[in-house]
Length: 132
Ligand code: FES
Image 1 (spheres, rainbow, N blue to C red):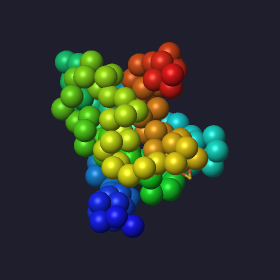
Image 2: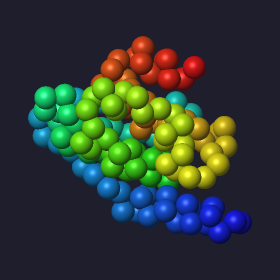
Image 3: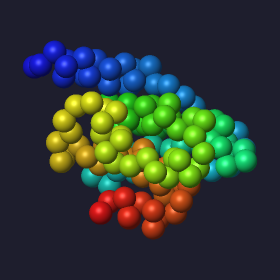
Image 4: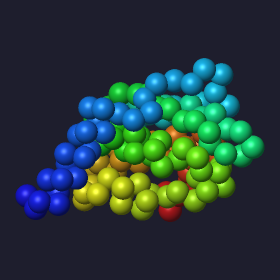
């Protein structure tokens, strides 16, 4: 295994074992959960939005290291963004952040948290656009 890949695997495991922004936000402005249809694993996110800015975001869920690490990384990226900026975050950004090659079979794991953001904050149409 290349040194780089080793580093990224540790980085993913760290986010899995010590997830950032894990928990719930009471009286959140946006709350949404999605399930990976292939395995039943879940990621949910709560957002507190003020004046169009994501002031706080937390996630909860259960699943494989890739799905949970990806959610942890995504919350770090989203905090402080405007909803308009967050809408621009796409598949490639999430995969780049994970930093390892994701096999087609694991793509739904890696992108589950992005789906929560897209469907939760912008509705189903936004998520469908992103899948194309
Ligand atoms: Fe279920 Fe990855 S195996 S989300």
